[in-house]
Image (cartoon, rainbow, N blue to C red; front, top):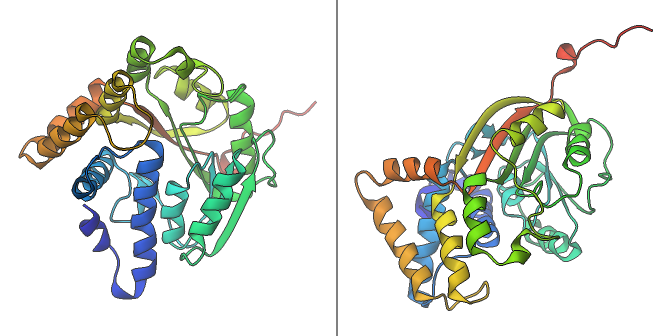
Length: 300
């Protein structure tokens, strides 16, 4: 899969290409731990997790960070809750101007350091809890916020800030854990998984779009994915280990099983069905109305 991504770009774009691949790997290893124990397994498991992400719609060869969320050099992309910077790294590799925000100062510093020398036209790291965002109104045209809303005290105010800083017509890529996977986690995960600062709310497939629409955004797409990671986390809690290798044999075997499935004739089709049955995450792509579509204020 990494080889396929490397073929996306021509020779004169090699620096951007390498940044994109590294960003994809960083995102996967940060959000979901890489399942590997022996050094010879690392490349193969990295490859299958990246392949799984690609089949889910992430890091596409046409420059889409996620299906229907295109990143262009002229974009100014904001990632709120950037974590280890994998998603914003992909955008930097595409030549966009990037602004990234996290409450963790070290993560912001590390992301800034990694993006130096990338193809990004501008790099801006901000340490903030996004309440409010230290950015002006109508500032960016692409907004990313993945796996954050389940952590915040007031998702309504949080989304209002995301909407405020987007330009009219700005496109938003939003995700939260899916209720199906979270229901499993309620049974198998320790109580702290659902305590602050972790997941303090579960958003259903009705709650999530309602929250987005009530914020004033127009939903263009809603989907879900992530059966592999739903199962990984269900298995993880019984293995009694931290988030580092050597991984328990159960987790190693699950990674190899998934790799085998995806290599088979019907593997991608089976993955798609399982992603719908027990997804890890639900995703919404939404747009801020353009000035032409804003409702006029009523006259008093």
